[in-house]
Amino acid sequence: MGMTVGVSVAVAVVLWAFGMSLWKGFLLAFVSHFIVFGLINYFTGIYMSYKMRTVEVEQLKLLNDQSVSVSCVTCGEPALVPMLLGEDNVYTCDQCGAVNRIIISAETALPTSPVSELDPDKVLLNQIKKLEQPKES
Ligand SMILES: [Zn+2]
Image 1: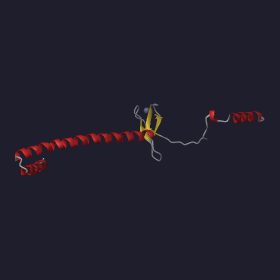
Image 2 (image 1 turned 60 degrees about the horizontal axis):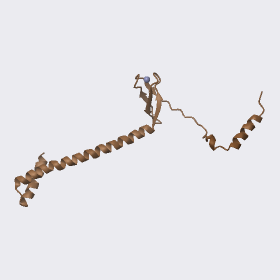
Image 3 (image 1 turned 90 degrees about the vertical axis):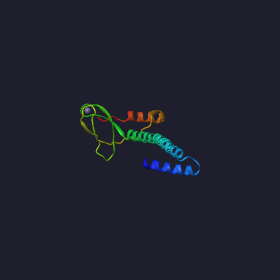
Image 4 (image 1 turned 90 degrees about the horizontal axis):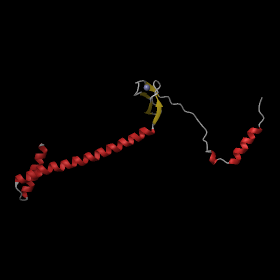
């Protein structure tokens, strides 16, 4: 507030030097000070909330990418839980309050192609070969 008055006085003195009444200049500077600052605050507020929302959306996306769908060991309540490799992944069930630990297990599989992309002759040949193999008894 003291600074606002100080700046207003300074502006008033400058305006006074240009022939404006001292009080008029002071009031003009004082009032426009609040208007300008109000506008700056208003637009800064809009910009900040926009930025915050963008960050929130990014965080949600990240969370969604690194979450697993699990169900509670005790009551079976499904939950979407963020999971990080190399961390102890523990969550508390919203339904029953039980503490669950997520165990990560990895397995391997051969990449497969859809049947429609396979060569039908080869598939048929493999089936015939299987049929021709003598059964072990
Ligand atoms: Zn539960």
